[in-house]
Image (cartoon, rainbow, N blue to C red; front, top):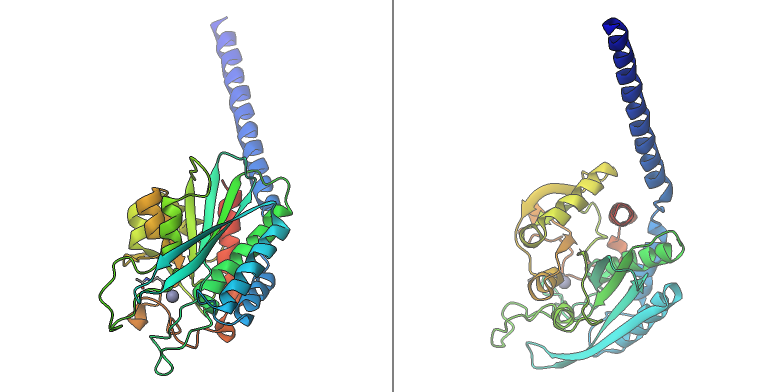
Length: 329
Ligand code: AHN
Ligand code: ZN
């Protein structure tokens, strides 16, 4: 009798464990299938075209015609892909005393969703080429420094609007006036917080009441040739978990050689003000060139920052990583 009971007991255990296994396998298979089927392909050619459009207006320096025209182009293009696009118009006083007329542009995907993620970039270009050997007082194209992040954002907004199964909220924020920072030996008294006017303004005047986001990602110089991206110290301080998630996602997608898992210097960029003043964890994806001494690339704030030095492979690595991050949320 007891032997029979033992036999039934063992058989029962076998059945249960068998059931568990198949259930686990099913969940695993399903989730793999769903994730790999859903993520769209980032189109680097399209992003590249969005970058070249911006540079064709001429340098997007605040208070100039190319700046006004490109602002209109960006707003019109975002409106093609979203019904909720809005402007923040404001002025900031620069280190040289000029009053800059600035415009942040915000475009929302699924505007009523409560879980929101910010993808941001600055769209203005630097009025000087202070790292160049000549013509240091003329403005730069800023194909990488400014236009590249915006190009990736326009492509993301095109892809997300086409996918009705994408349900989380995304806010694309184009910050103005990032690159009017005080150059060295400018002859003007030293000004605090002379960079990043758009993010400083937005962080204190968000575009919606009680606005909050789960986290943010800033794109800055994401189109350079053979670019590498390290984990900057400011992001590591304010948003370590988000930063690890992005670099892990890049590595899983096969971009581990570009997304270097190394914590580097603390950078002052738009993400600093969003973290400090808006208290939203934001991570910077910004080119890192250790051999240059300046942290950034050799074309940084020079006339070589033009469309010829934009690399589609870099745009693909960044754009596909962002899509994978968004679709894994
Ligand atoms: C500073 O040079 C203080 N921060 C770099 C931010 C920047 C300038 N990004 C693009 N241009
Ligand atoms: Zn710059």
